[in-house]
Image (cartoon, rainbow, N blue to C red):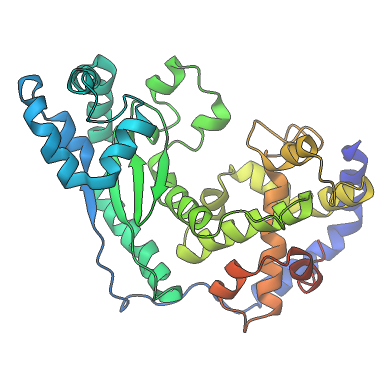
Length: 342
């Protein structure tokens, strides 16, 4: 059904797109592209993957207290939440941790991580992002970054003043580990080193500004997610939009070309204000594509629309600062004041 919307809008907008291109080329620079070279950032990155995986089996019992002391809360997050072996107070904990460390898969992942992940480049990219973070939020602390190898479990975890990162979840779409586990292509597409920093900034924003009760329909969740992607945008404006939202270039081009058709479909089918959980998931959740639109469309296409609404709102209100936006949960007001016209 959506195809008839696409055909209609493509024909009507050909001339408009020509003028839009001319307009865009005359626009001023992206206001998010700011000079943060003088913003001081003290970034702490601690490598549990290195310290844990170099521990010899016969020394594990004596090393556990040292690891726990050195890695604090993250050590428990890692053992409880990420690899699921419980806590250090359990009788068989040293044995289970040894089994994890000596597992063939873990050792292979360790080798692949050392080959695929440039930790020096990663530090520089994180410093760039957190310089922007400090510029916009000078009163907030920079979380301590902990890297680990989790056996292909969680990619990013957050807790009070820390972010944990599973390096083995970013080995590239062609990684044989992912294919062996039967991970679908749409997931593997975003499991590469260039997605690490955007994913971490996304996780940070979700932790700092969690979903509220006001986000109770599709439109509000679109704008809530749009705010999060806009935050990622602000943390690293030089990054290509495909990496900020996790779309391929072809998927991004689809969204740009058929933005009006998708918006009209949601409006005409009275989906924007639906509170039906399954209806919302169809347009917000990850997957191979958005079935209601086209197999060419990306999943989470409604999130992309929400991002454009937020971008339009911020363009219309240059006096609104990023902290103001992130704390604004009046989603209907954001839409009304955005001047959004796809």
